[in-house]
Image (cartoon, rainbow, N blue to C red):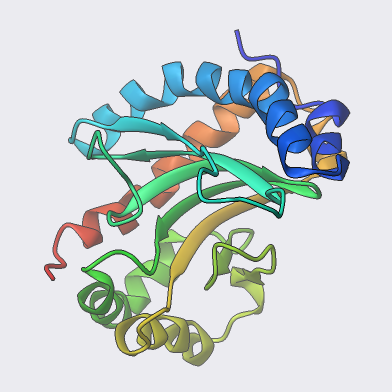
Length: 210
């Protein structure tokens, strides 16, 4: 049973050294991702109508710098997720994030950016003002839906269409201070609601072809 996130989870990102931090991620955070996965892999499969597989971040390419964030991703391929539209739950030292993401390795990126730009009026109706957007999954900075004009939002979509390394992520951030107060069931409910809200973005991605 998922019990929520604790101060100890966030404190992992203050540990010095690659091996030491990786060990803490494996023992402290990864079991929580595995618990969440048992719920969200089947619920996402039902929600989007495709079989969903779980990918817990391994950080395998790192040789020196310890990871500043970690996550579990959900995608329709058993072998990988970065090349596909996918969902994520993860942590930085400052907050929890829940995303729908299309990142730079996805071949549909350009086509998807055009679809998003064409559907901007529908997207503005579907995505709550409290949600946030990101254009780089490696950085914690986000742009709030409530602060983006139509022109600025369209600019994010057009960037995805035209810039080779562009990305688009949409979802929620929950600050560490709020996150540690929430029960496990509150997290399950919040993530469920977030994924349901993001499902139309996934549906649009089905129309994009590389």
